[in-house]
Image (cartoon, rainbow, N blue to C red):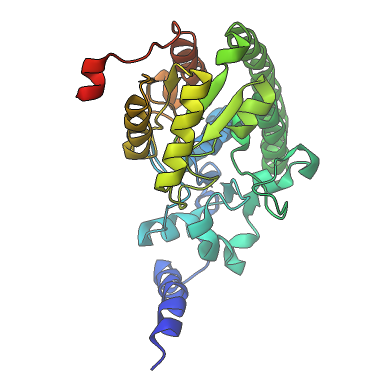
Length: 326
């Protein structure tokens, strides 16, 4: 018996079983019962986008809550039921939700699913690796690129729910203006950090669009996806870079365990230098609902404040002999 083949086929078999058990009719969208259009998103960032454009005319839910890593997320039976009931599914695409690929690729979901990131102009996207065959999915960290994503969502919502098209257009215009103001605010605040200290070091390489947009050098210990693992050599190389550049702070992320960043800090300390761990950044998810960080604009402002505080700190000094001994 080929157990490897069985393991390969098992997720698809389980998915089909879940689909079969959801309902006898496919799909049973909420709007058929006379309710508001039901929009289901994968990430909190997309949910925030849909809520700002749809306002009270739609119902929006997200599969992934605060602190959830979309690179590792797998669909549950409840998720499949919600996907089946949705009138519109918004997902990032560009391999962000890699472990949802089989579910979102089902032909009965494809007709109502929109990979927002894949609708952007490819010329505006960053390559994920040297091959150039895939793109970095973390598009929301360039505020004006996210404004373009807002236009994609607006147009798709208007096409599918034409009765509210004018409302969607007006809401999107207001939100895009807010994003333009936010973009200028970020540029001004980060531009005040000395260029030599404008280096953002995080657990995984999620901030490359942020770096390109706002002239910040970005280093991630892991790759584009958190499915990659950082080895000892990666830790040591990054520690040496921090010491050579006298970087005052590095950052953990809300959706990524802090242990690898803590390992870098320890390696830096062993080299006779001290680097602080700054406030936790939001990378692949928003903050808790009901907090400023639970919205896209609030999340960006929080991150900028944390980066300002960490990178604007006084120049780090070498550790004392007592610290090295400890």
